[in-house]
Figure 1 (cartoon, rainbow, N blue to C red):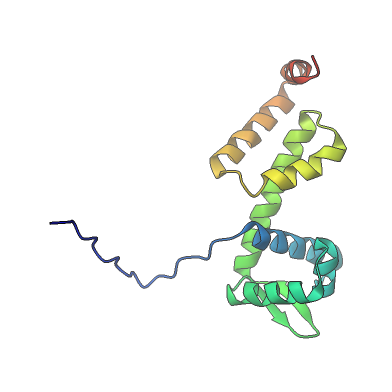
Figure 2: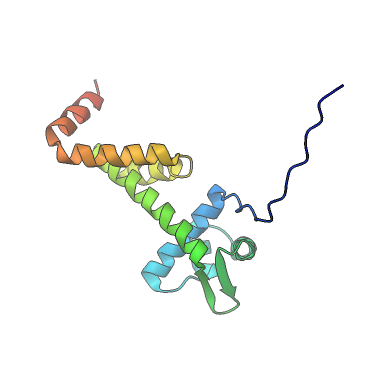
Length: 154
C-alpha cells in the first residue's frame, strides 16, 4: 500500500513573504531616497530604477500588502519597521561586499555592478566570512599585498 503524505499542520503563524531580488531592490532604493532626501515618491523610485511610474505603483501596492511600506497618495511613502529592517540588512550586505571588492583593488567602475550581481544571491554565512576576511586583510597589509599580487594579471 503506498505511503500517504501526512497533512501539513497549520501553526497559526504566517510565514514571512519571500523577498525577491526586485523587492529587495525597491526597499534598498526607498531607504536610500529617505536617507538622502527625507522622502520617497513613486516618481523618484521610477527614476532610480529606470522604470515607469505605473510599474512602480503596482510594486508599491504589493509592498504595502506585505507590510513593508506605508503609502499615501500624494504624500509619498515610508518604510514600516519590518521594511526598515530589511532595507538596513540589504544596505549592510551592500557595504560589506563593496568594501571587500575595494580592499581587493577591484576597479571602481566594476565594484557597483559586481555588488549588484552578488548581493541578492549570497548566503549569510558567506557574507559573514567575507566580512571577517576583509577585516583581517585590513589589519594585515602585507598579506593583502600578497593576495592582490597573486590575483593580478599573470
